[in-house]
Image (cartoon, rainbow, N blue to C red):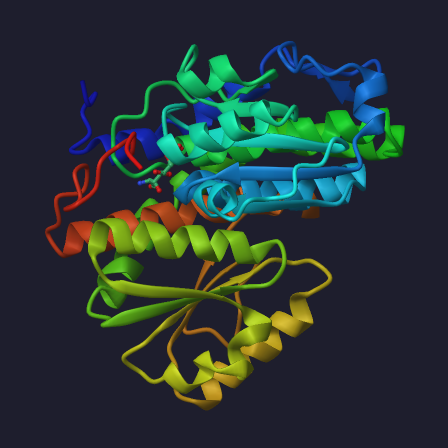
Length: 361
Ligand code: M6R
């Protein structure tokens, strides 16, 4: 049932006000400025002994993991990184007893992610899951984890589950942080930020008409460049994947700082850039990248916390705490991909060549 929407994708994008509320519900602990994650199965002593976090997933789940790794580093100060699950499993990785492994999957059935979990388990590692589908294979085979409670996601491209997964990582990062060195004041600050999310998502959704107009303006692009820096980079990767999957427009995602090391050669009017420009301590650096693109007559659509003069157009996103900004930056970009595909008449819920869950090798 599409509940009055023309596609599941549109329904699922608009459901995010409620689905984000669901991943938060019942988990916030104001008394200790932390969160409770019932199924984690990792006590405080074990959490303190973790020396590294390695996050594994595929596609959009990998991108959510990249953001999760940054959140864990920032809030819990544990070195963390993410890697595509399939790459990990084919490179005979060193499995370290002090590393906490986390498998991320909407379906919980993605074969590459499941195989990585099984290989890790076989070698005695501690593996958690950040999973949407309750009781799925990855949920069953991990030692514990966090359910993301996005609800059923029907569209082949992931939207609400991506957002909820990132929020689940924020919860996990806060939890690990408060067991380690994150202060009460910072805990309170992050909790206040989390509580603002549903209303801020509603605000982004109210901007849909504007985003649809912009999409129509850029839909004739042959190819698109997505750039971001640090917190904005995984959002750029995810936005680029979304656009490719449903509009079939070729897209590249690069860290803004890498432009001058090669991809700047691609910039010309037929290749517009979508720039993710949060109001954080990298703002000036990001503005400099916009200037470089303008100097090569590139068109720029900025996703930012306020109008960017150097850009041709800006989608303004509400500001949250710096660490939580990546959660909201993704949402207008889902709408941008959606309206681009709609303008091009694509089969949005069932893009060619793709399946909802990839249960084969
Ligand atoms: O169910 P999973 O999260 O494990 O799926 C992983 C990928 O196959 C999935 O995210 C894919 O990239 C989607 N089509 C993204 O929109």
